[in-house]
Image (cartoon, rainbow, N blue to C red; front, side, top):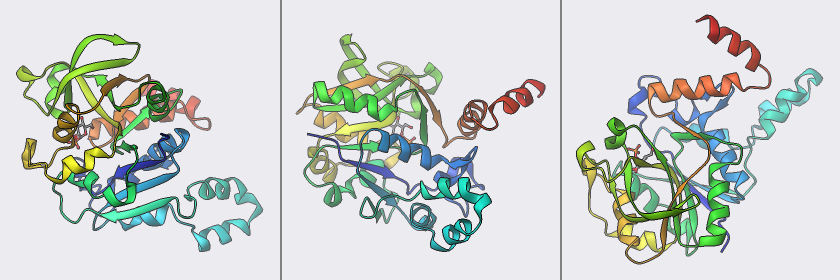
Length: 288
Ligand code: G1P
C-alpha cells in the first residue's frame, strides 16, 4: 500500500537551542535561506507524500502560517516585476489545500504520545514519520529511499545511521541480527537512549520511519520509558514482535538541527553547496 501520509512532530520546546527558540519555533530557524522544516517537508514530498500531519503545540502557530497562502505578501511581490524570483520561492512554500493537518499535543508527554495524537488523521494505513530536528542531505531523499525499499519488503522500516559510541545514549539504538540484505538490516531489538555500556550497537535511529497503523493501538497503552516519557521506540519494539521490521542504512548525511553544533554543521553544509553563495561561502570558510 502506498505511503500517502507523513507525521511531523513539531511540538518540542527546542530547549537545546534556547533562547533562540523562545519566541520562534526551532523548526523555523533558517538553514541558509529556508527554515529547517522546509527541507524536511521537501524530503517528504519528494518521497510521494500527499498529506502532512503536523503535531504542534502552544506557541507554534507560526508553522501553520508559514505553509499557508500569504495573500498580502504575495500580492505585494506580484506587483513588482523585480521580485518575480522571490515570489516564486514564496509560492513554493504553500502546501496544497487539504494537503496538511495540524493537531496539538497538549502536553509534552513524549514522542510516542505525539505520534499517537495523529491516529485519527492517519487512520488505518501505513504512514511515514519524519522528525524535523534531523535534516538529511542526500542525492535521493532519505524517505524516498525508504519508500523504495518498502515497495519490496513491506512491513515497518526505520532509518539508522552509525554514530560514535560516546553518543549512543542520545538516541534510539537497534540490535542488528544476521547479515544485512543490501541496506536492509534485520533486528532482534531496539532500545531508547541506552547507557553507552548497554547499547546493542552504534546504529542510531535517525528520525525517519515507515510504520504500520497497528503502532497506534500499542502507543495507546504504552507506559513511560526513558526520561519518563512515552517513547515511540518502546512501542516499536513491541510491534517488532508482531510484524516484519527492518532497519535501513540510508545514503546521505544527517544533521541534528536540535543541537547547537548540529545546526551549525547543517548551515555550513548547505551554504557551501548553495547555487547562489556556495563558492563565496567556501572561500569565506577557508579564511576563518
Ligand atoms: C528521538 C527518538 C530517538 C531517535 C532521535 C533521532 O529522540 O526518540 O529514538 O534516535 O529522535 O534524532 P529525541 O532526539 O527526540 O530525544
